[in-house]
Image (cartoon, rainbow, N blue to C red; front, side):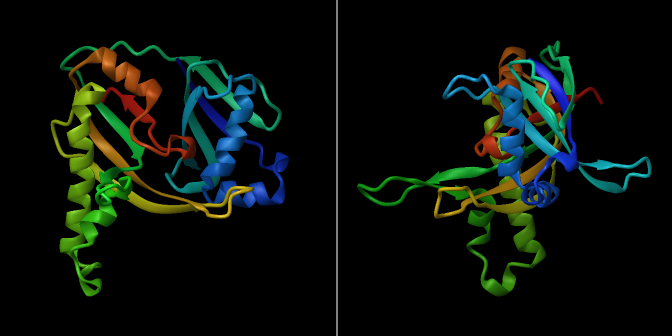
Length: 230
């Protein structure tokens, strides 16, 4: 695997791309990053990514996009993209504790009725439904949504090679609507930022998780699990 930090030369973008990237547009970001893997076979997904905004030394946002990319191939050199890449082969041990960050799209399958296909539901919106419109800004509703987000990750953690010894922080929750050329309906999905501590239960499965990602909407900047030793 490879870990890359990618910065975009904003002068190389069209006006439309520029505004979309600065606003966190995941579809435009995905298209730009695909140019680093131009020879990819059809149906192959060689990378995961996460978009951040660069910070100055004082911790304030500089408003410039930066992408972290895990890939199974070394990215190619492309005009307009500054890529810093290094091989990534983490040595993990069972029982080791690591700090993590994750942006995920938490969904569950909902039964639609006899003879009908199930559909995916946003976990946080599902937790919000029992509350009346007037209660949806209450602390009780916020707590229920955050608990649902934590439970979603904790329940899935063992299959990804780790467990959560303490409840993670649930950060930004965003609902995205992306317009794609040739598609009448926009692509809609949500994302949640998690940060906390995990304990390795299966090193091999966890390394596979790093390359495969967690959850859905991986093409739009979700699923990349970032680790560091605390």
